[in-house]
Length: 99
Image 1 (cartoon, rainbow, N blue to C red):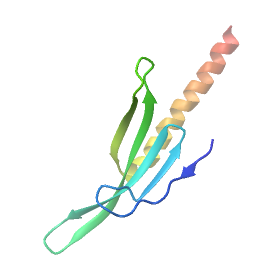
Image 2: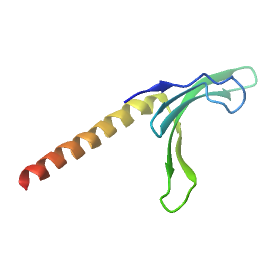
Image 3: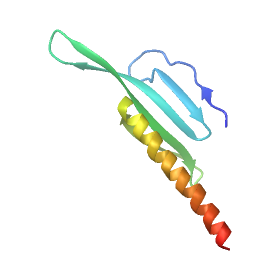
Image 4: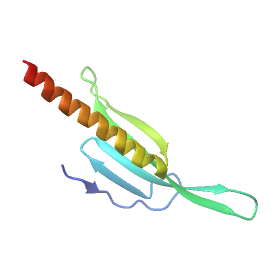
């Protein structure tokens, strides 16, 4: 599987600071600024995950997006996706052996 690093977008409004794509999946990293009080601001980053697909009966590309994934969520997501992959792999192997 090839991972392509997409060109860094210019730091203008509503543009990700970085994007990565694998097949029809894309992850975008966004920089956010939150004003705490009149004198200080906090900068933090969030991630959005999107999947592009084309419906069989339509000739239109669609896009599903999960927004505002925080840094501390990434490890949790990776772990549960690994568990799902393990289950699907081993469950398939076991059902193949039963036949």
